[in-house]
Image 1 (cartoon, rainbow, N blue to C red):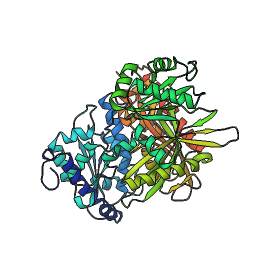
Image 2 (cartoon, rainbow, N blue to C red):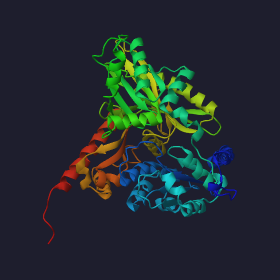
Image 3 (tube, rainbow, N blue to C red):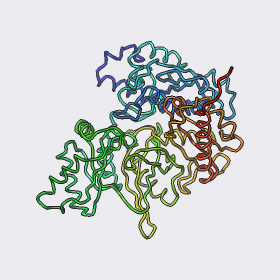
Length: 521
């Protein structure tokens, strides 16, 4: 039921959005009250991944992706806050203790008393928000854990109608983009937005669905850019590059000749999906169902993939939070693997300015919360960098949890003019992070093994130095051989060295764990 006592199922879409709008009007007051450390303030974290295609192929991996949000436990440094954290399956006590042990200046046992963990008990790969909505008793339990709804809000990962309905059911506002604005964050929507704002994007076309649409668009791209060798086809709702596919145009007939269209169509039917195991026909069927774009693949001798993270506060002000260089991999180098922070100062300002223009436009349209603009930057022979905006993520993303982990642990803020993050002490800080530390040998380790090895090697985050490693996605290491990690240093070199040292230490420990030994007698 919503806060008026009306069952959610009794409300149609128009009525649900009317109820949602009323709740959202309360957010500025809630935000201001929570800044004052009000008694009985709370936040409800529901890290649901409600996206068309994710990389989660098992319930264990889905749970680990939800647990990326455990950095939010560091919010318990606020002494009056109650934090309700919802997941599909129970979080191991040792993982909870690990995060509470990172809290600066807080007694862990006090923080533990203010933490409310709620498990749905459903390990399927369905979105967490759907699992919650399907279980009225779970919703009721979450609601009962909120001390005072007038000083509480929902913290989602992404915002769809599912998260809207969770907010309505709990009677609290949501700090995130209105789901009605989601088309702005689609591949087609962001290309239109970039054009409206006057931000440079790769040559291409949006609003496409069929092979014929793609053929026509690629033919036009070739007419405008005769030298184009590759184009990228993107499904509107793809995430982390998994909805992308590469089309090779090399060796095609010249632009404008009679058989060009047939040759282009044949190449499109030979496209190379970025997602492992996804076939051409399956990709094209998803493209027809969801729509998408095609655009030139930017190339150059020096090419990077930075992003700019921003947020819109409840008072509609826009903050520049960070710039990152993305670490990409996969079949054609389009899959997000991790990030380096901050982005190279050589171009960080060049991408911040157009990104903030996008952010201000989004704020005027009513967007709230965190979002990011992804770029491709290319350097020419004169060392001049040119930036192309390629995506808008109206949600938290792969750069969110490393950045907030850093911010919560060391304080301070990003200086956009200098392109540096300065801790509360004034010391510049740097990080290297990944969600994809993957190796089958890691399956020999348990979470406790992970904690033990970084402690022995003195790689664990040290509050006295404000450097070290923080792990995430810890629960899937044994089943999936995968971990996430954020390595924090006082220089780019130290961050990279810490990252590599932790990787080497874990793989060395995994090798030892795989070595057969004598059984105890």
